[in-house]
Image (cartoon, rainbow, N blue to C red; front, top):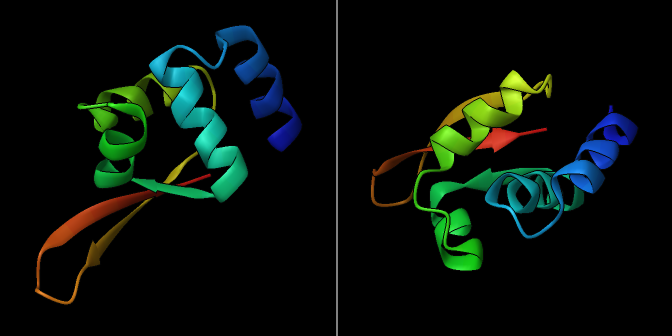
Length: 77
């Protein structure tokens, strides 16, 4: 799977938002909206995740809760 994802990064490039998000997932395994915004200025992570899923990347979605009780979604490769 990671080989397939790596080939997609090569095709997408690391300058596109989809490429940046996929590269992050390959290197770190997970990504949240806050990480996507702060690191890559991706404001609509759910749309980028949907784009990656439409390319055949299998991602899991986990609902998480931080220490203050705020819910957020974490995407994993």
